[in-house]
Every structure is written in structure tokens, then in C-alpha cells.
Image (cartoon, rainbow, N blue to C red; front, top):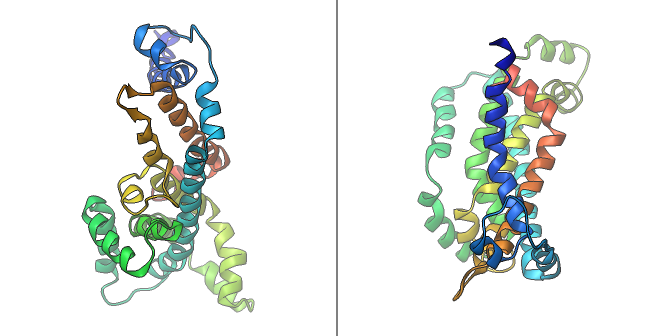
Length: 266
């Protein structure tokens, strides 16, 4: 019986990888082959779908736009959340717990609730269809999440570390950047990962607040619809390429993620 213990995780991994394999498999097929035959691999292997994406500015600009506002949002969210989380972790003030809970309530609300207010506000102040506009809108959800995660890591660091640094003559900015941030590096990595992934997969706000200049790839993928139906091969190729940025981020922060699940509030 013990020899079969590998069977359950193997089946689980197989089920997880099957949709990804099928997406990649479809990306090397034509739409006619996808609709006409059922095969585990392409009968007529083609790279036309990927060539279309990498040569059509409308397509590859979608990836550039998405990466631009996602990276901007991640930097803003982590930068703002670090001092806020430190304040919640180290100080007690009137209404601190209520304020901390209120931050999380923003994360609980669906994005559709804020789509129209953001649209009207951005149209009035010329932030519509800009990277900064989408990044700030995503910050409404990512900053509370970042504060919540980082506060858990910071609370795990003894306050004696702060006091010892002050006795040694460290100013607060120097202590925070030279000593404290390296101590919670795992928490910063985990926070950046979650901020990146949420902003990367979020579609409603990104599509509502953009039109051309900052249009994300997820919105561009709707162009595959035509009078003859969907260009399924092209859609599969675009979907395959959207997996790559997330996989790259996971690869570089994999050690931090493991520590985060073991030590922090994740």
C-alpha cells in the first residue's frame, strides 16, 4: 500500500497540468483542426499563431501594457504598504484595529463596485487609458492585502531589534532599509508575488479604465471573435504566453514563497 502513496499526488499533478498542456497543444493548431479533430498533439504543426502575436503591434503591445501597469502597481503597493504595516506592527493608537479591519474590507468588495466611480473620476482628471490609472485602481485592493501580509511578518520580528539599532546610532531610515527590510525579505517577496498575480489576472478594472494606449492583453484577446467564430488557435497561443510572466515571477520568488507560508501571514 505504501508503494502506491505516490499515485494520489501524481494524479493531482496530472489533473493540474492537463489544461495547460491542452492550451499549449491548441496553440500549435489551426482553428479548423481544433474544431474538426480530437488529437493529443497537432497533426499539422504551425507557428502562425505565435508569429501573428509577435508581428502584430496590437497583440504584443497588449503584453507590454499589461506588464507596465502590473509592475508599476507592485512597486507602488509594496512601497506604500511597508511603512503602513510597520506602524500597525510596532505602534498602538486610537482605532488601530478598526482601521486595520477597514483596510481588509476594501479587499472583500468586488471590483465591479468601483468600476464606474473610477471611470468617471479618471475621465475628469485625465487618468483614463494610462498605466498609472490602472496601477492606482489595483492598489485599492493590493495595498490592504500587502499591509496585512507584511504586518504578520513584522510582528514576528522582536522589537528588541529596533531598540538595539537605535542604541547603536542608526537613524530610522537607515535601520529600516539596512536591517529591518532584509530581515523580512521573505515577506516582501511573498507580498510582491501576490500583488503581481492579482494585478496580472484582474480584467474588469483594467478593461474598463483603458481603451487603446494601455489596453491589456486580456482585453485584446477578445479581438479573436469574428463573424465566422473565434480564432481558437490564436486565442490559445495568446493564453499560453500570458502564463509565462507568472511562471517567471514564481521561479524568482519561490524560496520566499516557501518561507512565507512557513513563517508569515499567508
